[in-house]
Every structure is written in structure tokens, then in C-alpha cells.
Image (cartoon, rainbow over all chains, first blue to last red; front, side, top):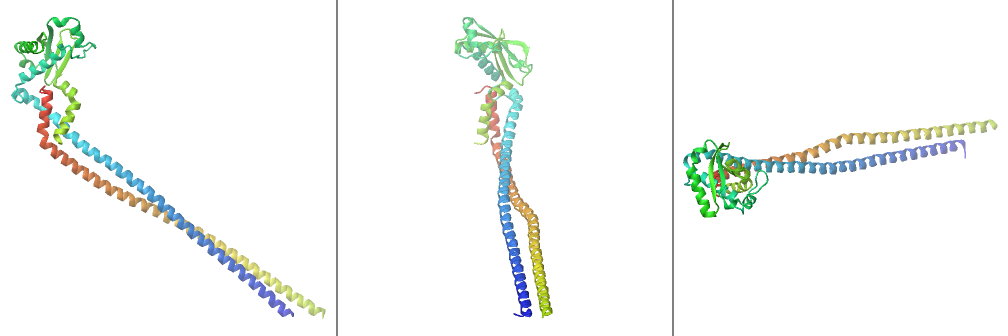
Length: 234
Length: 108
């Protein structure tokens, strides 16, 4: 083999080695880029899934909040009308005092409230709570049931004109006859602050029934609200 | 003869030197190709991060928009229902007032 051939051989081998190195580098570079693309595609998909989940949760949060707000809007409308009914009922009391209600004069209405309270205080079966915790039942057990139970009626200055002693005597007589309880009702000189109604209390002040409109409203409020709602939206 | 051999060896060494240079240059070029590929992959990744941020925002906002649209509908329906509730109640309001008065005044 001559020098020329050797040199040619060396040159060929070097060229082949160069081609191999470059080819391998190109292949590796291609792999690097392919891997990068695959990785990016996976990342994009992960972002899409993550954001869809986050977005769906946010959407549901907005909807839940809207549903709560919707309930509040409807509840608020119901409360508005219900409160309006109670306010109008209170305003109507002035008219009741002048014109009566359902065929009854205000005097008769007060008489009914006095009678109801007086029976409640005097009946041994109806244990009304006293200011000191004593009950009407106890009061009767004390031996006072044989005697006439002394009760006084308290009204507002405005309502004092509607209650006379003769009316109270008539109520006392009715209770005695109907319930078999001896009571004596008298109008107290003490006046109460109320839009109307009465307070009936034992003279010793231990037992009382508050039948003012404010107290009745408070006492019957849960059932009144139920009834009003049923009537309004039946 | 000796000088011819020496000349031949010299030529061969030069040829080998040239071969090493060719291979060395090829390796340098290969390293550059790989570095460029790594650089391109890095650039693609950075560019993708910005696109992913935009995609994330776009997807999230699409759901928020859907939620807001649903919210508007729910609230509008509720307001409509509230108006209907009030209208219906107004028709029965007088009866309700009377029912309250009946209790307050001791009718029942």
C-alpha cells in the first residue's frame, strides 16, 4: 500500500467518523426536541385538566352563592309582606277602637280579654306563672278559692274610658256563673303603656296575666307567623 | 531511500493530524448541535409557560363566565318569584290582617 493510499484511507476514516458523530448528534438533538414537545403536551394537558377542575369548582361556588342569595331574596319578600301585615294590624287597632271588629265594640273586646285573663288567673287548672314564680294554682291551694278572688284590671289612659266598674261587675258575674269561681274585678288607678288590651292581676300582685296587644303579639308570634304565611300564600 | 521513508512518515503523520482535526471539529459541532437543541427545548418550555398561563386563565374565566350567567338567571328568577309571592300575598293581605287581629283581640 502506497503513502497515497494510506493517506486516502486515513481521510476516509476521519470523514466516516465525522459523519457518525454528526449523525448521532442530530439524532440526539431530534430526540431532545421530541421529548421536549411530548413533555410540553403533557404539561398543557395537565394545565387544562387542573384549570377545568378549578373552573368547575369556582362555577359551582358562584351558583351555590347565587342560590343562597335567591333564597334570601324570596325570604326577604316573605318577611316584608309578613311584617307589613303585622304593622297594618297594629295600625288597624285605632280603627277597631272607633268602629269595633267583626260586630263587636272595643268595649266588648276588652271585656273578653279581661274575662279570659281573669279565668286564667283564678282557675286552679290553669297555672299562670307569677312574677315570683308562684302559680295561680298555688294561690287557690292556699285556701283562697273559697273566698272571692280580688283582681284588678290595668288599662292604658286611652282605654280607661272603655272600662267601667259596671262592666267589670258583669264580667265577674259571668265568670262566677260559667266557671264557678268567685272573683271580684276592679279597675286599677295605675295606668299602663300599651296600644290596647289589659293586664289583670291579683291584688297582692303575685299573679298577673298580661293581655295587652303587645304581649299577645309577642306570645302568639310563632303561631301568628305560621297562620299569616298560610293565609298569604295558600 | 531513508529520506523517502521519512517523507512518507511525515505525510502520514500530517494525514493523521488532519484526521484528528476533522474528528475534533465534528465533536465540537456535535456538542454545539446538542447545546442548541437543549437551548431550543428550554426556549420552547418558557414559551409554553406563557401559553399555559394564558390557557389556564382562559379556561378558568370561561367557567367563571358560565357561573356568572347562571347566577344572573337564578337571581332574575328569584326576583321574579319574589314579585309573584308579593303579588299573591297582597291579594290575601286583608285576610291575614284580620287573622292577626282576631288573635290580638281575643277572638281566638
